[in-house]
Picture 1 (spheres, one colour):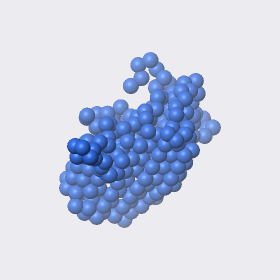
Picture 2 (picture 1 turned 135 degrees about the vertical axis):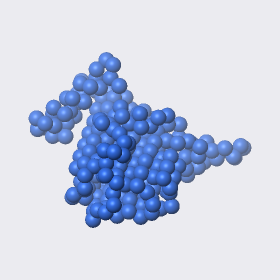
Picture 3 (picture 1 turned 90 degrees about the vertical axis):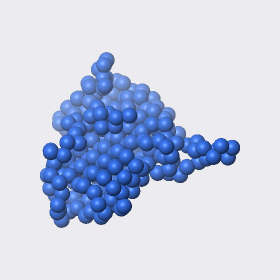
Picture 4 (picture 1 turned 120 degrees about the vertical axis):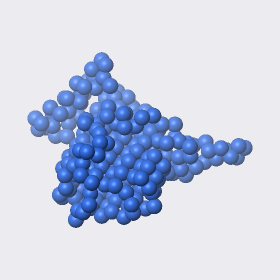
Length: 251
């Protein structure tokens, strides 16, 4: 699968064109360990970013303009790309990528309330799942995303791994994810959905769904939309996504 092409369907103005960025040489708010390339659109301000490339080779991290928060990125797989869009507020987010050719993309305007753990590519076997978060997603605290189980499970008869991911984790734009939720491997969460407190998502979620439970069960609510608050700006943005994804030929 062409993950950058898919990312462009959920992240406005997504690009890995390095000409739109400045290669980082020094920034007091960013600590880099290991050898890899970090690209910034603008210097980060109210932020603390720690990037550890470990021994991974040929890896790139892109960080858009207006980033705020505390972010840790840990990469152990060669040829990995991590992309953070514009105007993200990521408070206490830990991103870990443990696979070769890893791909993690976070859209514009994505926010977290507090600690989140997003893990890509541990124990994936021959699979190569990505982690894609679309524009304007809202994460509460203590949320876990994993696109693999973390460790391989083998058939005793064949010694073949039986728990490889069958797909990526793709959270489409404008999804609200409640506190202590977990989103697990091989799932697509449809745009404009709400994931309830403590839910564990193990299967695809249709767009405009309310999701609750362990394992989570989806109820479609196509006649409603959620907004970050009651301000005119927030409601207009919510209506934009509602209109976009409820259209007959929505992407």
